[in-house]
Length: 414
Image (cartoon, rainbow, N blue to C red; front, top):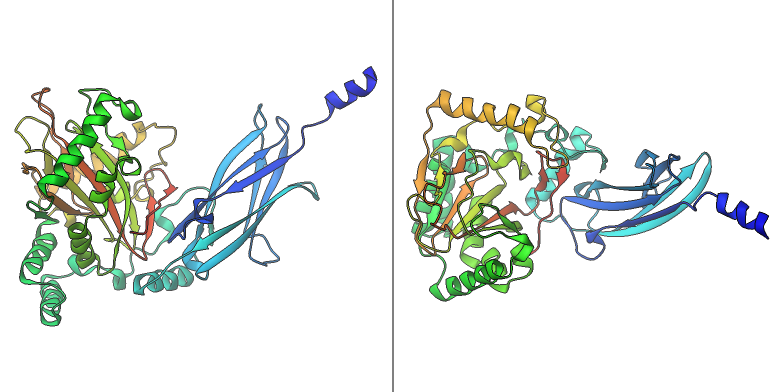
C-alpha cells in the first residue's frame, strides 16, 4: 500500500482547461474577449488550439509553458465582425504531443448591427485581419489610412457645412443641436450647460458621499485618484451613464447610436498630464469615441480644473506602434512616459496650442472628440474638491480597444 501511495504521489497533475466569456450571456459587438485557465505540471509544455464553429483547422494555435505553480491564465479576442450575428461556438483543447489532454467549449453571442458595422466588416475582410487576436490589440491590425472612414467632423470645412445643412433640411437636428455640432467640429468639444437636473445632481453627490464615507474601492480622502465603474453599484451614476440628452448628442456626432464603455468618478481634480484619449480608448474607425465630462459642483479656480486645448483634435493621432512603444503591462507606465508624452508635448508646442480651463457649473456636461488634447491642472488649493464623472462612449458598430495596453474594450447596449 505504501508503494502504491508513493506512485500516486509521483503522478503528474491532471491537465485542466476552463474557458469563459462575458459574451456567453450578453450579446457583444466588436472584439469578444475569452478568458482561459490551463493547469499543467510545473514547467510542462503544451499547445492550446481554438476552433471556431465546425472549422476543421484551428483559428488559433498557441504554445503554453507552465510556471512553477502550473497555472496559466490568459485571454484571446475574436473579431466578432468577421462572424455572423448570433451564437458562435468555440472549441478549445490542450494538446501534449499528439494527445488531447483537456478540452472545453464556449458559445458567445455576436451582435454587430448597422451601416458602420457593415463597413468595418468589409474593411477587416479586405485587409485580411485575423479572426483571433492572441497577444495584443494594436493599431496595425486596422486600416486607419482608409479615407472613406473619415468622420464628417474630421473632414474639410465645406464638407462639414454640407453635412450640417443636410441634417437641418431633413429635420434630423434642430437649430441648437446644429450649432452644438458645429462647435464640436470647430473646437473638438461642445458644452451642454445645465444638462443634468438638480434632483439628479443631488443623488449623484449622495452616491459620492457614500463612496467617501465607506472608502469604496479603497478611495482615500483628498487624493486625485479616479474611482472606476461606479455605475455598476449606484443607480444615479448609471442613469447619468445612459442620460438621454447625452446619448442624443453623441448619436448626432457619431451618426450611429452611442454605446457606453466605462465611468471614472473624481472627488478632487485628476492632475493628469496632457493627453489624447485616442491611445487609451481606441476606436476603429477613428473618431468613433467621445469622452463626456459632467460637473457635480461649480468648478473653482485652483481645484485642478479640466484643461482643454481648443482645436487640437486636428493634431495627428498617436498610436503605440507608430512610436515603437511597447504595450503597458503590470502597471508600468515608465516607457510610455518617456516616449508618448514627449511626442504629445512636441506636437502642442510646435503647433502653438494652449490650454484653456473649463470652469463648469454644477450640471454642465462637456463632450469631447477622442483626439482632443486635454489635461487636469495642478491642484493649487488642496482643500478644494472638483467632483465630476467621466464616461467614454463608442459608436455602435465600431471596434473598441485600448492601444496603450493592448487589451480589448467592451461597450454596453443601452
